[in-house]
Length: 343
Image (cartoon, one colour):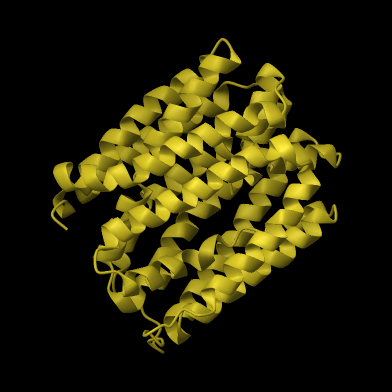
């Protein structure tokens, strides 16, 4: 993840795709990945989650292999996102303290992502993609020895649909994120002329600080509550998002990028725990899948819009649109969930 956030758009650019075509391909990847995740999450709740999490990893592995061969369309099958939360559901089954378990998981994930962010300094794009194949195979093998108590409900129902529908705020977040986040390395290149190896330390630092702050968000939530922690950190991140495209040079832009990334994403384990606590165990996979799907579809549209503006030379407007969308979603989240703070 750490390396791909830097190289994918630049690799596609090296294959001859335009900024608009890159945006469209990134959009299609999110769209296909979200459909695959939703389907596998429903099947996981019905028949057990482990086997479908393995299938998800297998699809991703094959996709990266064909992308390594220089086939751009293969990218659309690389994003299955853990099959719509099946891995989170497996973790919830194993954990006595879900908040801290998710916090540790998030921190470890990001620490490895830091290593990935540094890879463009040492490896060419195709070399990193080949490494992606090997890493996916390792991730796949680590799932094999896990034992699962939950064998599937064999019944298709969503009794928690009212709760799930409130997380439609994620759809607004997804649209905003899709406009700029997948294209950040391309934005740095177009705005300041920096290359992949030059921006690699910035992405690595962004991930490194996020790794430590992710577990810190769990401790912060114990003091402030989950809802307030999410709202406060997101609000500060939104202010920085408005300032980012106004940065006069690469150094200032990098600093704002790092801090904004931390504030916007540090509460991921808190959010995931909050969601899982609101949903019955037998519905967690599909509920998580639906929430991811609601976030993914608008996110799929975003890169095409952002790519269009970048292709037209407008490197400012996508950030402002994203900032307003984030603000609206954060306000709605607080209104709808402030009474659930005690969970």
